[in-house]
Image (cartoon, rainbow, N blue to C red; front, side, top):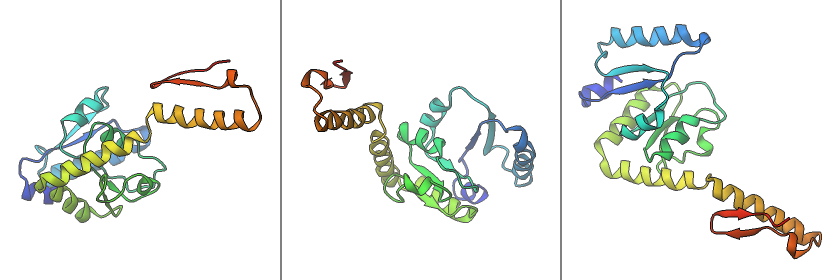
Length: 182
């Protein structure tokens, strides 16, 4: 963050969420490092919040900086859902849904210089932010409830057809609403 603040002195990072019992010492080290670097006005620790989506909606960028592999980075999806460009580390399952340059930017896990470069790139390039935001919204649309229900219904319809289940038992669709004719 120190490098980002050098180039963008008004930049503010919100660290949202509370530390679990096992992460309290890590959170304390983060706070100490922020003080050591003199970034108290640029890095704010919010603690646990109920309005995370609202906070994300006010951000220019959502950063997911995990250095440990995660199978699914919920924070990333939440950021994409509110149309924010995402910078994420390439650890775990993240590269499966963050397409570098398409719906977000990927940086190597544990590389703060690469993270700072990606953030500075986004802060200085409004068209890139807009393009990644659009890509993020398109990506999360693939995971909508309606799409999932449609895919499951298609499987049931296919099985019903294959096994000769009568037409009257087939599911019927009306817009995004679904009614099963049992």
